Length: 247
Image 1 (cartoon, one colour):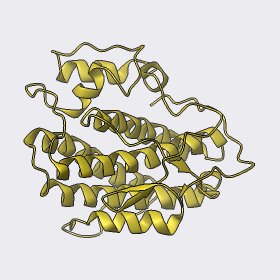
Image 2 (cartoon, one colour; image 1 turned 180 degrees about the vertical axis):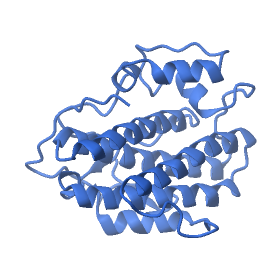
Image 3 (cartoon, rainbow, N blue to C red; image 1 turned 90 degrees about the vertical axis):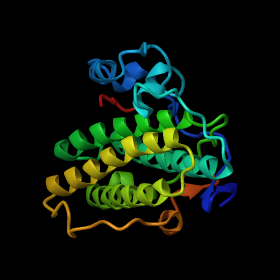
Image 4 (cartoon, rainbow, N blue to C red; image 1 turned 120 degrees about the vertical axis):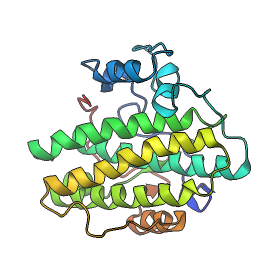
């Protein structure tokens, strides 16, 4: 594995690979306008540009911050490290869902929730990128067949959603900016709903314990290292096509 690290998270700094672009326009993930309509009701001061990339535009700030807050940029070294860590994690999670859809190996029931959760992860990625002056570049991923096997994909999705919620709790106590903390809180509540929703759909108890303990970032780094999903070069022979991402 080549590249740098963000607070212990290894990532490759190489250019994006694949047959389709990793950037999606708002119209790609919000074909029926549902995301735009919901956001405009909560954030009436913002104007939404359906033709703009999710990575830049008013929708990004609206999804990330309360309406009364001025969109913040992470300033302290610690906040920048935490936001960059989460950006790399969202690169991975959104890529997992997008590639699984593009390959077409998911059953209709799994595909339905994967589309919704994947659209949310893309929105999270865009919102997080708006909180730093320079976001980390997208890593190269090799999901090693997980996106081609229904059961493996489901187990991987549950593991990442569960651990992401726990990591966000750990990070909350270490953020310096209240505005950045507010943005992280909006992500945390959705990630916990993702985890419970997927568990319910697949017939697993949504919550096994009365309390969820925070998990340090190193736990996520260890999970990524074990999966070997981050790579310096793409897997040869992978069949990928741009998915019909509806959100």
